[in-house]
Length: 215
Length: 216
Image (cartoon, rainbow over the protein chains, first blue to last red):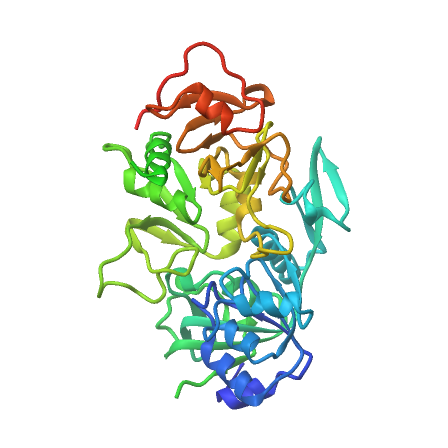
């Protein structure tokens, strides 16, 4: 694990890269990394996240800046710019049921090829997918998702990179930290090793590649 | 009484102590305002919280304590938080006893469409498909008609949310169930006639015996 300033962390991400980004309507999103990506003017990113927040907030800033070529998300209803760019053909949006999205990411991080879920059977979500019956019940084969980078926000990080989250800001964060080649973390507070008790560590430091220094 | 108040009050009577309950956005959210005295339920917010409490007073809001719409909520004593995989494991795994969701259309067999209007409204399904597929009991809270047109139809014209039928539809006019897969009038709102309900419903409604008034 390396500790680096936000400018260098964002510079690791190339144009065209795929990013899993934590957060649920912007809560638990690594806002400082997002701001720096916008400042550096990245292009054609693929974003995998629960939602695209709202204009001016979290992932919504990447959308507004026209930096996203493809989004895989469960909900875009609170960001009209995402819908406009999708309908205008400027951005590809894959809508995935939320429980399926998080399980596909979990599968990607846990070495599984995919998961079988009953969600979406018999709906438009089934199009192009394999239906598999197990013990008389139908499931869809939903394949695993991984990304080049996971951008994670935690409430506490210790100097080794162990992470602890706050309330509803946890959401996708610990799951995406397992599913990307490079994991970059911002933390609201960076604390000495030992402050987060072993039983309270949610994401082990061994998963973290870069911890962004606080100003 | 306003339509949405009638709906929320009636659905609140379905709550039983100890239930884990997920409320959708809109009318379903109002159900939490009418929990009957002596009933103690766990409300889940799918962004990762069990023990969701009322909207906090000014000055007591916390930026990382929010509902599934990203708005501030409170957490009741004994609340707990978890990640999204756990949250949807609870939903899909049958651990949620009851979910209340809004509806655009419901068909004669209880199939629900509530997540998109092609070409007009494409917000994404969020957690709706998982909730309808996985919750033990699914209740739809919606107005009986939209701009005078029935929402309970022979067949949904909008994309379905799930092929699992819902258990109950509660509107400002009636409570409709689906025993043996057929839309059946169970209760009507006070002051509403059976004819009123039938006329506002496209799907054929099974009606037998006297239909009681909704207890609200």
